[in-house]
Length: 241
Image (cartoon, rainbow, N blue to C red):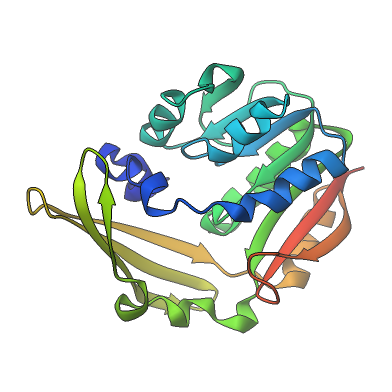
């Protein structure tokens, strides 16, 4: 189940304006070239930023996401006709044979339930050609990133075209073992509306992720550092045997 930040049309429309710097995707673009991937599956494609970057480089791209409002934003963007957009997740895919499957940003951690996580890895495995790769990132739990998710550190006011000023901030509401739940709040200056979105991320240990991948038929080729969060995040490169 996707969070309100992705399923509510008014909040989905804010995703790109409130996070315009997507230099975190540069590493994934480089890996698509490194692995000579021509067909790419973007799991949790959201508003389509990465899928459209890939399509702009001539890749054959499928973007899948459970949040219809986010897909509506993606489908309205220039060049959207070059991507095959699917409403669903990695467990509901049609028959595919891709060279590379990706889960960028928080996608892997947002699949918090163990059963859903296993099913996602299994679905990606089925979509990959033999020798194809799954690449995703997850934060190192030891760095306790959630301790920095405070209203004081995150509050900002952004002028959104067609909407006006939007104030936003995040606060952690619960930490229960590997699960961290937090709430984003959005205040619209134009009409005074306040909307919230609750999310839960699972902070998996490195060896836990490796075990899950190997149990489902992957070989872990590499575990890299995230260029945008050096020393704070793992980037897994797993290959379908």
